[in-house]
Image 1 (cartoon, helix red, strand yellow):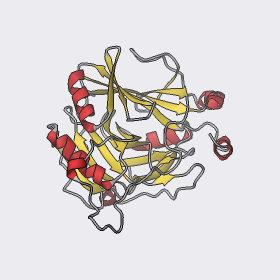
Image 2: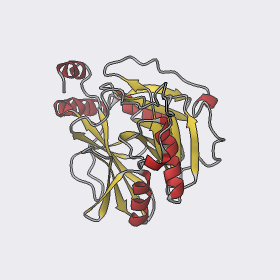
Image 3: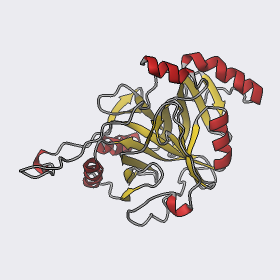
Length: 314
């Protein structure tokens, strides 16, 4: 951490800095391993579970547990060690109670979101990006062609977790809770259909987002790739592995990123994301409430009819 980072982060005490890890269950771990390995993640088998990593990054972004259904179990949010007492005092003032760790989860600082999702606050090193990630473009001029060679193409390997989008019965209540209690900031929203939140410590346009449903669930996890070519190549990579269903290629309005969503075997998605907006530490972002037609995309194929359907059990 630089001196500047310390100064900025000291000015926003009691604010989550990262989605440290999200945890969900699936009925078939081997199928999950095949899906995420094909996607380009570093899949590690750890004590009967699966850990999801990205190439060259030490962070474990997700854990996949054996379960009867695909189901979001809990989310761990990264905070600064010095902010533990700030959160404790804030929660005491507002009646936010500590809860016991869910079954199979480690002990720690646990609370419950308004929709019932267990949240763990973990003092940890910031793993969300603190600057705009490197973007790779073809050269403007070349004597031999600017496109990469197919014969030399390498597998697409995402660099880091950009964000997760969660289903919730009450988007407005979650906005209030995650901003007032957890220190996140609203980036943009579209009524009570969808909302996007970022970290005051610096993050992509959203590190967590919420979509309207009748119960909690994981809609998608989004993974940063360094080029538009990687979005297209990733889509092809997954199609060749047997995962052709999804949405995209397209471009979002909110966040501005180019995308390809690939449907997993249980109805949720993993997203290849390129060139998402970045909100620097301490920056004031002009959050707005957008029309529904601007909530999803500028261009791309028609939205699948069930794109916003929550297939997890209530």
